[in-house]
View (cartoon, rainbow, N blue to C red):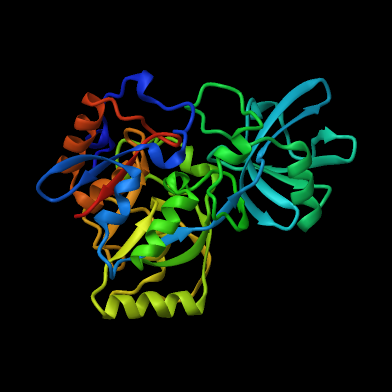
Length: 340
């Protein structure tokens, strides 16, 4: 399938640099099989059925951008994925300057050694700290890793803005941004309606921002991310599927993990491993029945995913409507609720 099928023109001024304030005041494009509706995020409880099941990704973003030195050369590293207690793959600007065995100094007590340079671009670093101590160092010396299309420096405000209110388990280097719209008031409104909620964990990797550099989707190598679904949650979701209740995924990361853990019969299994599932049109969805998500980059794997979920032409029509009506795009932008 040609990657160019998923292209569209987006005016740069529609890329959101700051979130809506309050978060749930953002606009919402409701995409149904037959029509598009302009709404706001606070309309979500009214759009859900009483027996719907909402599933959230409760990963927590760590300050994953690090600045250091290799000799006199400045180094900017962005964590991609944890490989061991002391080892991460990273995106590094001007990585051609680095060689295996080189030492990068981030602080007098915080360094890393280059283990290897991977063929597809990332660099593997072994840090001089491990486990909880390493995460403490990330918090001490790192900054929040805003997406590359937000053309400004990260600020202290982003430490709260670029984190869901229900984030629990540290390990993500990018936010599950569909969840950024949820506020205590919105969660209370969902609870008052009796909407069942569950939390699973997919540690979003920096690979989510890597562009698709091939012409055909069959040649794209999808990045891997670590996901966790416990037995209790898997059983509850399987029961909901058996009862013909809708599973509503909050975000593409939630959807990818649910689809990775669900078999052809609709049974959701416990999960604790990497997933590199790549969803394109033609994929048969086994678990998720409706999707809450933001607007995605042209020619991105996430735009391919929503096209698989709702139809390429319908999503292109929806995005054209959003552009014409000046919706705000990407991580800090507005939301969509897709009912295929």
